[in-house]
Image 1 (cartoon, one colour):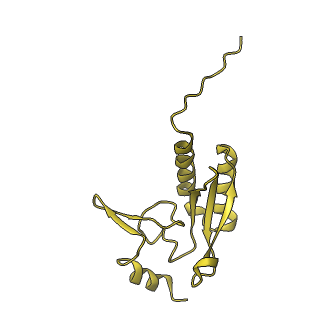
Image 2 (cartoon, helix red, strand yellow):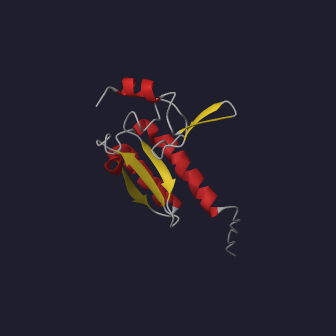
Image 3 (tube, one colour):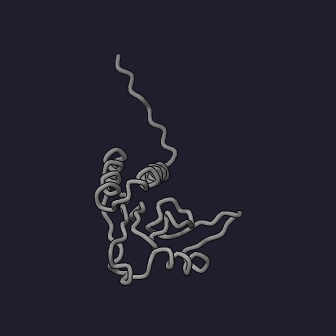
Length: 131
């Protein structure tokens, strides 16, 4: 495979995942946890991880691997629990051990939290008062 810098220079301006809105450069890559069109977050160029919601409501972390020239084998999903605390622990584990990108940990955790809040919606939880 070519050097990541060369791949980024080719795909920087002509990527099908790139979206320009309101003066922002965004990305629709499934492996881009930040959603920004930048070299540091691009899953096309280097190993990265993303967090997506599955059809069943669970969170799944998507990690791209070593098969960059075979898109069907390039990414694999690691299931994460529906529970927010367990889900965050799973995302943290994937960021540190499987993806090898501890710098992406905070971005992936923020994405997982945002997806969980969107899934829960505006439910108001009533606290029990023990008397």
